[in-house]
Length: 229
Image (cartoon, rainbow, N blue to C red):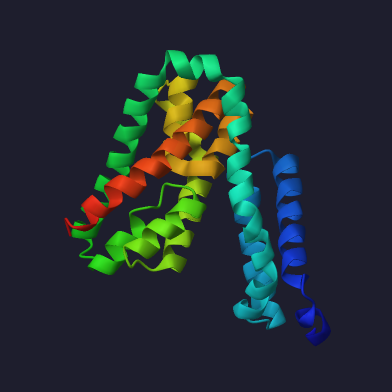
């Protein structure tokens, strides 16, 4: 085990294997709750608990994957470009929808913070929960939030969006692909967008645009909300 721990890419290997197992399970069972990322997180926790390897050791090797986060986010611009005509026709509606979703997300954090009597540090930590990690880390850091908790809240939000997005759209009879894309991209960033892409090309493209706009709006609006509590 010590030899493996000293390997530079051991953490990356564990992460990729765990995620691959998650993908296989999802394909076999075809149930939304068996999200590959959720499964991989659970498998890694179990591995660390039983192997005795410290999280710090694992993280030092797995951090190489995080370098791919920004390029992966940028790649979401490809489907957006392919649906450029739809974006031009519905630009104002998309902008208003994303703005409404972004403000609503922060209002929910504010209400929960008041109900559960959270301190200011915890409050600002959760404000960027619905935007992509690459932007959320910077927003949290700027407001003196707890970055690790911000990352965890973003991941949890994304997993919920990925699992329940299609179900919620059916429940509330949201059938317009643009409306679906705006809702998913604004509320659950890149992980939700991956689900939107499975639902359709338009949904995926609009969701890609929405997560980018939501990120920019959060950078502007979050500091304002941080002064409320």
